[in-house]
Image 1 (cartoon, protein in one colour):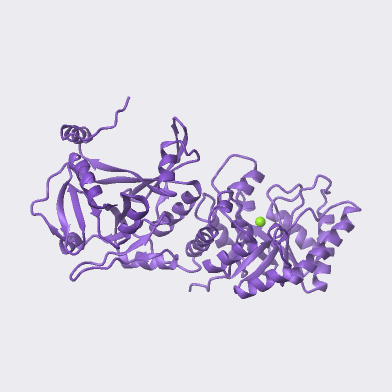
Image 2 (spheres, rainbow, N blue to C red):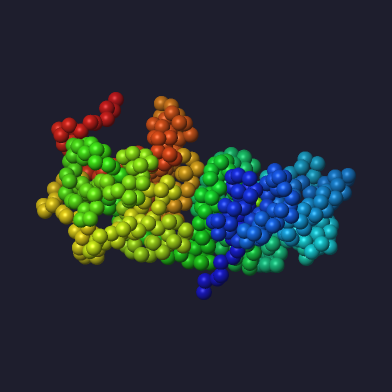
Length: 539
Ligand code: MG
């Protein structure tokens, strides 16, 4: 039986903007609660009581107040001062209306390497917290001076033996050290698991503090086994909120609403993968059916001349729209000049560009249901009588991904229902679309990674760094299990690289090349050259 989804929470530190911006973005995305990061409270021009009211108005619980640093195992006089500091934090918590505070393991040079002292101090803090009906949870920082593993933190919590003291587990701190929660069930009683923080990250070789502070990602965007972490945690009986705690320089500069929505999606996917709330299954993909360009009549004529030299012929006219099909063998291009359409919207913004692509899926309705569960916008273009409804999902940059079903047993295809097709359109040397490459800014890359992974199940191939004369381009191809859909995503920090200039001109992201598959590529190029195609000089 699927369990009920746990409450979903996000730390304010994940998002950009002022504290009210962050809270609004979290609520709009559908989170149940927020972790109030102390720094966000300090820079907010208002009282904790106002923050409490804002959260109440937005129907957001404050799941935890964090972090309280360098508390345990300090010599006197810091020890007594720390207990006084704790009382001031408790005042703030009561004004905020939250009962839980996070203490992360001490990194201070003067802290003592004595678990018994740490336990004694945390017990003293828990005793004071309990007097106000508050609770304390203790988290092992991966770079803690004496405590860096959850087992060490648990040993201290166990020794302290106070009902108001428990553990906070953080997937980054655990998984970045190559550790796991495999032994959690049977070691830590469920009632001692007070809180969990989830984050993913790319595998990087750098010091763990910098890695954590700048490169954390939402689950599913990186390479850490976060789903296994959650499975182990739930097996140990954890029943509290699932909270995202991601420190990422790009996220903190990107629009907070987009990042908050991606955060919520990452939890939905994680819950699916951990078996908490299964999503409609991923599609079985079988290639790219067409690439669609937004054009006006002048752009269409120019593009037609260009692809004509590549051996494409206009082989179809849409029955009810100003849309043409150009075909070369198995490769289909759609030129869309229909007014008041998703394509015309794109054309008005950016001029002629790729505005959509279509992937062949086994069951479009199931993928639409999956998209809706992931809060991706589903687009349904208006259709004429007798035409097929081809659903599409909006990608993070506003382009569309159409979901085309391959009819079983080579049945009637949508082209025949929607287009007046020229007879005898076979021939042409291309076998299909090989890949569609997109250029984007670094923060858009993370949104796209989540989109392609979550919706289509595409996984990244090994990353490449391509030297451009004006900077580096990072490239990673996202591929489905069968290898039929391949989408390289390219990112450049430099605005002067080809990729960077393209991204600036395309408001953040866009398709910058389409590659076709040919049985004989050299023959296809020779044929294109003979027809006068402008070939790229390669030294
Ligand atoms: Mg943490």
